[in-house]
Length: 164
Image (cartoon, rainbow, N blue to C red; front, side, top):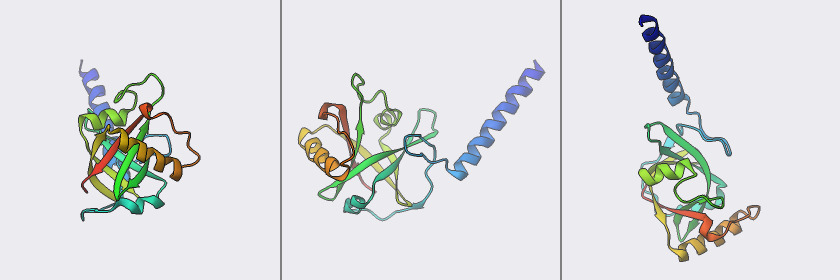
């Protein structure tokens, strides 16, 4: 029994040390591979016009998992009338928020951290189901990302970025 407790103790200590190292180094997402913590320069001044993101291909989004461990991904963004929108494309047969870990995390806790360039913004994501907003944003997505095959609107989830 003592040997088992020692083994469990060593494993727990190793996991804690690993999490500490990863929290320092970040372990950010790469393309379609998710990551953990985002590192960069925190921006504390409010953003009133997100149109500067028109020059940005992708943003990184850090959410909080059920286990309080960060989960970060890359996604597309567009600015509409100075407001920032993020999208999430869903394959056929998968219903929001399931099928995308980051969407499940946002549905549970909408407070996220965005990384744009080397800057970090603490914001809230609001799930936007307005068909007019979705149509306008998808037009901008098609224009900004001509290489993308945009799925039908019913397979796209939209988030409006609030605050900063």
